[in-house]
Every structure is written in structure tokens, then in C-alpha cells.
Image (tube, rainbow, N blue to C red; front, side, top):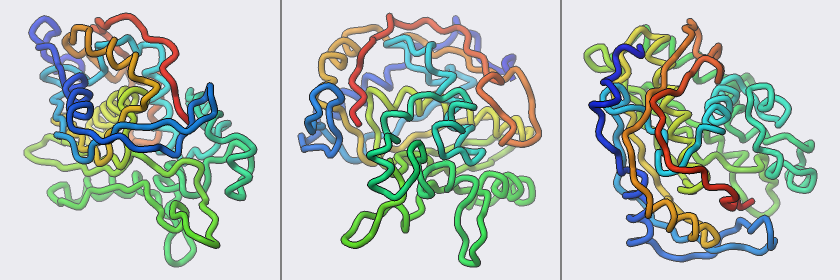
Length: 306
């Protein structure tokens, strides 16, 4: 698949990331967030903009959307590992760490989990891994969405119903006398695959997106998913299209925002598969390799509000 990429020297710089940030800053509204600053312990405001312009990436023609305004080479693999952990049903920090993702501990503390009637370290039955691999059915059983959607795409590739959801409403809703059963309600994971003329495209619809912390990981992990799904189905990966419902930036991240906007955007790199699997659940972070990555310096200490 790597030979299908347009040569790096022929790719054009992509300003999608900075344009999205500018759109939120220019059109957004300030509101108080339920999240808290990890240093002060106080609630922090966000500037939110609902329904910003979608972004479209043709990975083979202009590179995989791994942001270049700051270097994320140190954690792009963890983002890929996280998503494939979820596809395999991972819902605890221990399970996610086995896939190379170690950033969930702050969200699944004993206090946060106890509030929801969960064991420490458990993201809950309303989390991504539970929804993707063990979605509850009316008969009391479970349903593996990724496994079954691959079967459907092989059987009826022309259908418009190749759709996956991370949302299990009975576990995510908050209301009186009802205990929420997820530590963080899924932000991403509404995925629509479409196969046209031997090419597979993927639309990601995202409920909520922190542009500084979440978005860089989301773009690389879902690019990896599209490449892996194309490989499993023996199709050409085409477009990755991203819609965000609530795009936001936290007030305590504004210094980093200014730094990012001051930097040059460069052509996107190459993300390639180095190993082929027959099942989507068999992919791991080690099966992907990043090259042609020219990015600005790392920005350390961006607040990850919890």
C-alpha cells in the first residue's frame, strides 16, 4: 500500500488543523465546562463552536493527517493502540496498556469509578470497548459491531448501512435516580464506511472534540483504521471525512493555541501498514509505520482537563 502514496515531494502543505482552530476562535461562544484544570482543581471554560466545516483527507494523495504544527511522533502509536484496543473490547486501564495506551489513569481513578459503581480502572459498560465488541442486545447477549460490519461489507459492499456506534444510551445518560455507567461518555466512534468503485471511504462523526488534546490522536488513529479496513477487504483507501458536532478549546490552552497558529503547516506524512491481517481485530500499533514526518517542535505540558 505504501507504493500507492503520492511522493512526499509532490504533496502540498495542509492547513486543516489551523483553519479549524481559527474557525472555533472566530465563531465560538465561551461557556463553563464540567471538566477541571488538573493543576488548580477548578472548572475551566471552553470556547465551543457547533458544527464547524468538515475536513476531508485523501490519504494516498496527500498523506495521512498527522498534524505537523507540533511533533506528535512520541504518542501517535498510543492513539492507534487505543483504538484497536477498543475494537478488541478493552475497557480497563490494564487492558488498554496491553495495547500500548497508558493515558487513561487520570479518568478512571477510584473516586471517579466509585461514583459510577465501577471498579477502579474500569471505563464502564458504556465505554468504547464495550460498545464496539460487546454491544448489549435485547435478548441479553452481545454484538461485535466491527466483526459483523466486515462480514456485511464483504457480502453487500454497495450498501449505505456500514455504520458503527459507540453510544449505549442506557449507560451514558445522567438523570435523577440513575447511575451513569461510563467514566467518560464516548466522544468519537460514529463511523460510516462506504465502498464505491473498489474504494473505501470513512466518515467519522464526533460528538465532542478537544482540538488541542483529542483531535491529533483522533486523526491518526482513524487514518490507521481506514488503512487497516482497506487491507482486510482488499480495497483502495480513499477519503477520510471528519464531522465534529461540538468543537472546543479550553481556556487554559490558549497559550499553546497561539504557538500552534504561529507555526508553519507542512505536507502530511506517510502512514503505512507493515503487516497484513485477515481480521480487523488482529491489528496492533506495531503494524503501522510513520515516515516522511517533518513537524514543528514538541509542545509539552498542554493541559489535559479531567
